[in-house]
Length: 107
Image (cartoon, rainbow, N blue to C red; front, side, top):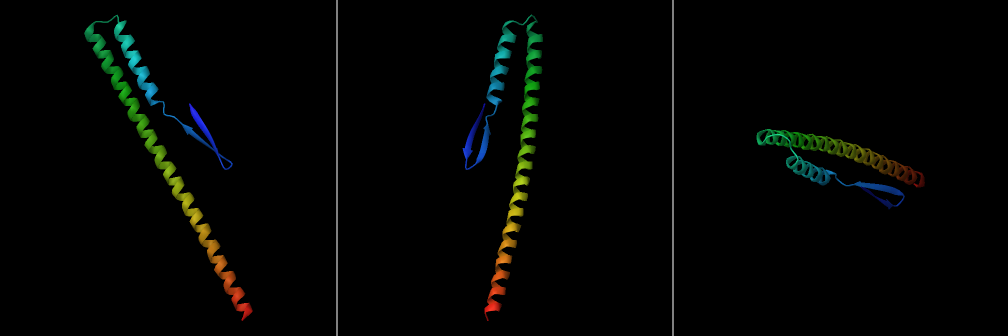
């Protein structure tokens, strides 16, 4: 479920992680599977092991995707900050130049 906040004309969307729900579903699925499993104990253990490995692989993939997304967001933030810094520097320099010109005209 996403929460939305309005802040000075901007809408900020905060998304909650679905990871707890994933683990809840995984646990319930395992419990139901064990209770109603038509296989032998060894087959059920193998199936549970396989499903646990699949779950671990999914978590690793999601963590990797999150890391990539975070790195991309960080890079975009750095680029935006650099552009704003350059704009501010150009504005300060233009102000200095205008001051120099005004000062020379008054002399």
